[in-house]
Amino acid sequence: MTTNSRGSLKREKTVTFAIFLALPLIFFLTAYVYAVGYTGWLSLHSWDGLSPHWDWVGMDNYQDLMGSSRFWHSLVNNLQWLVFYLICPTVLGLALAVLVDGKLKGEGIMKTLIFLPYIITPVAVAAVWRWIYMPADGLLTSALEGVGLGGLAQNWLGDAGIVNGALMFAALWSATGFAFLVFFSGLRSVPVETIEAARIDGASSWVIFWRVVLPQLWPSTVLVLGLFGIEAMRIFDLIWSMTNGGPARASEVLATQLYDVAFTTFQMGEASAIGIVQLLLAAALILPYIIYITSHVEEQSE
Amino acid sequence: MSVATSLSPARTLRYALAILVCALFAVPLLLALNTSFKAPDEIYRVFSLPDNPTLENYRIGLSQVGRSVLNSLMITIPAVALSVFIGSMAAYPLSMMRGRAGRVIYFVLLTGMFVPFQIVQIPTFYIARALGIYNTIPGLWLVHVAYGVPICTFFMRNFFATVPRSMYEAAQVDGCGTAGYFFKILMPASFSGIAALAIVQSRSVWNDLLFAMTLSNSDATMPVTAKLNGFVGAIQVQYGPLMASAVISVVPVLVAFLLFQKAFVRGLLGGSSK
Image 1 (cartoon, rainbow over the protein chains, first blue to last red):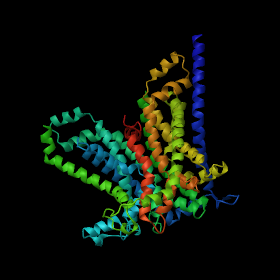
Image 2: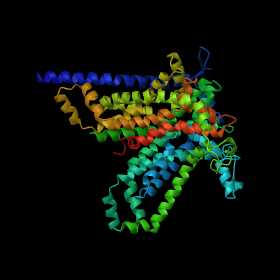
Image 3: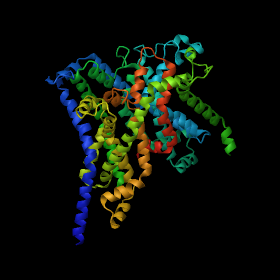
């Protein structure tokens, strides 16, 4: 009797779990598995987006990409964005977290001000920064002129040599708040007693930071680097809305090139091939991160 | 003691530096606000305050993006509610299943987190057209729900893992079924987690430009990001109305953030820093 009812309980549980998982899995299979498969299959074809037939071209699209300087330029830009994201907003966010985490008065306002840019729509960020970067009357040029350094003023978004730096500076303003907040919360979880003990042992603040505090920030660092890594491989909105990838494709990344190739010149096959390369790159980079967090969470729940 | 520390030079330096940094972070925001209240002839004197503050830019801005802000609200609110619910549905079994199957499903779902959304742009466009949901608001709900599955599952799975298993066992003893436990006990007990996820999801749905551009093409559907993007890249940019429109597009997220700041922070940390 007991075993019987336990058995039916178990069956009820299995059936309920299957029902619960069904809908999310259908969404996932359609939006991810089917869609990625579609892109992969399309990348082996030539298609203008309208005609009823896809023309099989095999690996031609990939071969074309390998020989295209435009593609390599986008790829290098993406890698530059990756390096930028992993270093600049991460380090600045950590530095600011340490700076503000000193029981300063007005800490709440400081936190909000530094974090605020992160929640602002990239399109709005682009609007404001285009205004800052206006060559003649923009804020940056006016400020430089105001302090007598007018000679340093540039056509910030119109010069192929400067545009990526200018975009990254805008991205720094918008992304730092996230790293800041994560590190700030991380610092709060470092036990005060540990720091006190180190201080009593005569360790300097500098040594305490490197030897005691920083190791405790490991989970925060993993979170920040992981999300920034994903962000760097995905970056689209800010660039698209600030420069459209210009001038003369100087600021193009894989995502903006894909959009342009797909929806301006309607080479769906080639655009899909770009997408598949982008996916493989992202996978190579971020899969280890996903494996890390799955195993990490698994430990927690036991 | 506290007086002594507050007067130390190191502390003064720290204050000065912190205030300087905050001021620098505030500059773009202040510039946008300042510009948005200026008449066209003063716009290019960037550092001056408006002589005659005007709301004209906001009137123009509202007529340009007002409708799209409403669209964004109608897209974001149901999309977030649905995606949190769907994520919780997946997370519940995955937080309870001990076997290999659960781990494999969880891992597969999470791999979705690294898929750059651009690569599904073309299929999403054609699938949406085939299903007749292209350029409709429910179409955007579905897309955001579908692409939110990995992150929502991840988040809620982390959250449910912190709920003691004894609660489930106690509910079983009381005759509460597996589904009953989810609806009657687990979900209500997870309010803080749900709120945190909801606010983080709201930000990403509200801010989305890519799906907005791919799946909407008329004023009746287009969310504010896509609409605003059209003005940002225009040849002849009117910075007064543009700044006003940018401010308008940010207000709803800003209000949500200020109201639910704690939940937002918890959401961003996503269970990783526990």
